[in-house]
Length: 195
Length: 195
DNA sequence: CGGTTAATTGAACGCATTCAACACGAGTGG
DNA sequence: CCACTCGTGTTGAATGCGTTCAATTAACCG
Image (cartoon, rainbow over all chains, first blue to last red; front, top):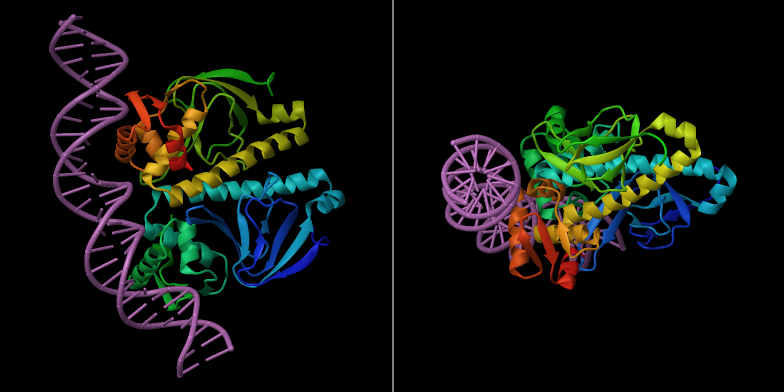
């Protein structure tokens, strides 16, 4: 899929695709961060996932996108028409790739389900910070999303997220030099919370 | 897959496969109800799904089962060795079937994630009762699982499940002639709660 | 700088949990 | 048929975690 399709730039908050929109394309994040979410009629929002460079998105198996995708930051995204990919790579290869991506996503959702159903706010936030930290090699971790985004991903309110961060910082487990940047101080403590 | 494999009987509470066990088989529920769940080290349990006759289970894409499966009631289960199925039906057909099952499961988990992250106890219970009711054509719906099972599926305690059922019954939305049997009285009310 | 959005913090509230007692129901044995 | 038991379910009271609402502070951007 590397050679196919076009690179497209999406700016902050721009929609990449909408919920219930026809799924005609595959997308791959090249730069920036993407958020996929659902918005209920009553305004309650749930963030299903954050997607980082290298991640494939939009591979919903049905005819429609079940969640929308929005650029969290300015993004470079590779966009490939599904039909073109099938024509170039063959149905079998594409299906295998979809299965691969779907499987990973399924495993992630199973873990997330446990997080949402059976963990405290503190554990959820710890888990989230750790997963952000695991994504980069540097000591300092940048947080690309707002507290509200984190809250909507973790099934909490942004106030609670903020309080839990304050608490983890008070315990010297993490350190936030600024609101969107942190460093892990006691990795084992964080890991045992995130478990 | 119909002709392959063997029928196996599992009795109530018997384990069909364990978490982190090698995934060598596919299973199809023929009679009875199966529960798949994970148990954390600290005793917290999360029920991932209930499986009814016709459902495929054990098709985890990785080498290991990510959740365990237990017979909720006495069960008839068709068990097929994965290799045998691949030999008989071909890799492509099996992969297609796995993709199909995985996709459905993914969609279900996405909905469940919203339920766990963004809905009240009352809404969760309403949603669950409605989904049980939609599964059968009869007026009276049998509940095959305990309140604890329901709670572990909905991210609640069994006391809360019990209270919410009592409340829905007090509002004449459902009626429970006995603890494991109910009838929907105000479908539209239930549906708007379950939304 | 001022203006604006994001984030923090405080106080009060409420939903769900916890802990404990009691009721129900199915199965067993007298 | 009733008494007993054990697992399951219900109900009550108290607690607490997370939310809500409101005010303040911090970060960002012109």
